[in-house]
Image 1 (tube, rainbow, N blue to C red):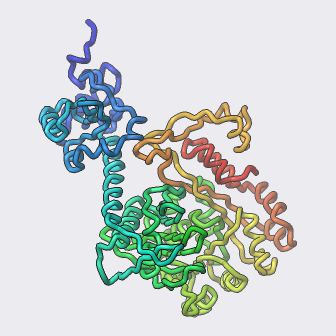
Image 2 (cartoon, rainbow, N blue to C red):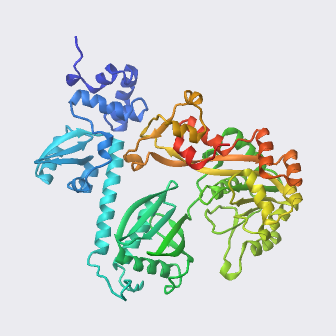
Image 3 (tube, rainbow, N blue to C red):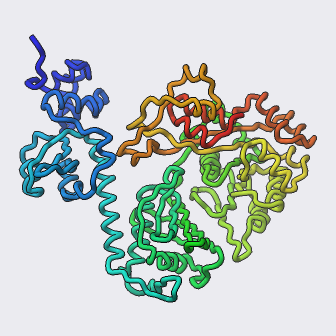
Length: 568
C-alpha cells in the first residue's frame, strides 16, 4: 500500500523519511508531556531531528510551501511592519510579501485557525500561509523589527529638525546637555550607542559625507553600515561627543582624543573617542570596551593543540618575556589576559600597566596610564617594581624606555607579558632591536614570541560547499592537486549572520620559541629571514599555515586566508 503523508501522523512521516528511528519517536512520545512540546519539537530538543527535516515532514503532511532562505534576506520592511511586532513575536508569524489582496505570511503553525482569523482582522486581506522554522523565524523577526525600530527612532529623533545657518559654508547646532534630554542629537546619539552595544560592536564610526552622515559598526572585525542621518545633524553629534568626552568643542582643525564612561541597562562600557578633521567634516571613531567580567580562556581562543601546550609551557615559567605581536584589533590583549586568568593564584602578585584597561580581572592589580597627569608606561613601571610583583603585564612596548624596563624586569626574576606591533614573530625581534635594545639583552630575555590574527568563522546556519577559482588557489598558495583533498566551505549568507556568511572570530597563531639556536642568531645580529628560517626548521608553524588549517577544518574561508596572511 502506497504511503500517503497527507493522511499520516507526523511521527510516521519522520520514520518513513528516515529522519529518525522508531525508538527515537517512542522516546519522544514518552517525554513530550514533560517538555510541554509537540512531538517534532521534542525530537529536536533531544537532538534526534533537525529543524530542516521537521519542515520537510510538515510540508509532506500539510502541503504548505517552505519559505526560502534567499527570500528572507531581502524582505520589504514596509510589508513586515504590517503585522505589529508584539503580535508577530507572540504568534510566531512574519509577513513576507504583499500581492494584490493577499499577503504571504510565514508561520511556524500554519494550521492555527485562531491566528489566521486574527491576521485577517489586522491586515484586512487574504492570508497565504507558508512554513518557517522556529529558529529561523526568531532570527528573522529580530533582524527586521530591530531595523524597523531603529529607523523609526532615527526618524523620530530628527523629526522637525531645521538647519541653523552660521555662515555660508556650514551649519551649527549648539548642544546643551543640561537642557532638553529629548533633543534630536541627544536621542540620535543614544540610539547609535545603544544599538552598537546590542550588536556586540567593537567600534562606532560616525563619518560625514557631502549629503549625509554614515554610521558604521565594526562587528566580527568588519565594518557594516547600520544607519544614516541628515548631514545637518553631524556637527551637533560631534559637539555632543566632545562635551561628553571633555574635549575642546571649539577646536575643529586638530585631532582630539578622549573617553566616556557609560552605564546602560545592559552593561557598563568605557568608550575611547578619537576625532579627526576631514575635508567633509570631523570624523568620530568610538572604541567600546566592555567593563564586565572577562569571559575568555585559553581553550576558547582557537589554539591548535601543540601551540596551546607550548604557550602554556612558557606562561608558567618564573622569568623572561613573552611577546604577542600583531596589528590593532588582532586579539593580543585578549590572549594575554586569558593567560593571566589561567595562571593567577593567591601566591602570585600580578600587576598590569595598560592603556586602556580593556578587561577587568579579579586578583590582578591593573593600572591605567594617563599621559595628561604624567602617568606614562615608563613612570608607572618604575613604581611597579616597588610593589613586589611576580608577574608584570605591559600593555604595549611603544618606545625604548618601556622596552628597556621590560627587559630589566625579566632579567631580575620577573615574568613579563607584553605586546608589540609587528607583522610576524621574527620581525617582532627585529622591532625590538630597532627600538634600541642591545642584541645580547634581547637574546637573554626572550622566552616566546607569538604573532596572531583573528579570522572570521563561517556561519553554521548557512555553511555550504565552495568551489574556489584558480585565482583564489594561487593567492592562497594551494596547488590544484592539494585542492582535490580539501572540502572548501563558505557561508552563503542568511538571516542568522545578517547576510555576511560569517559569525564570530577565532585566532590563528605563529609561535617562535627562543631556543639556544635562536638566541645565538639574535646575539650575532642575524636578520629576521635567517631567524625565521631557523624557527621554521624547529617546527614553527606560520600564520599562513594556521589559517590554512582553519580553512581545512571548515572553520573559515579561503577568502579569509588570502585577506589576512601571506604565503610563506
